[in-house]
Length: 78
Image 1 (tube, rainbow, N blue to C red):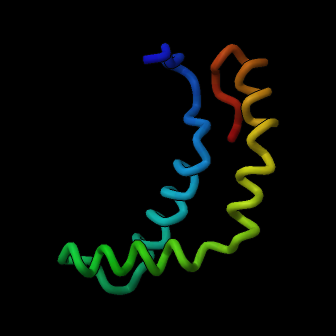
Image 2: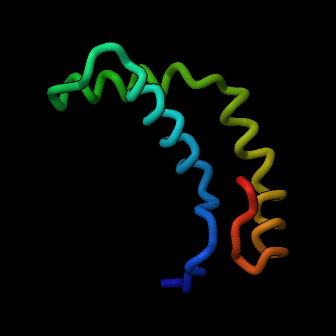
Image 3: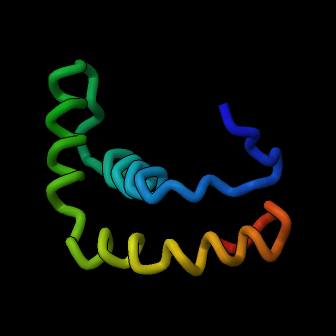
């Protein structure tokens, strides 16, 4: 396993996607009280994310990595 700096932000684009999904589920008018309902809400949230948002995460990956390296693994603002 590679060492992971303690202060390093999570640079994985999927973490940002999960954040988007989580916020959409929290705003959902009906709480997910069962696993099947939660599964449906996650699928709906996933399918509602604009492709441009996903593309932006990938397009900014180089800049995020660069900033992380420049800041020695510290907070980058992303």
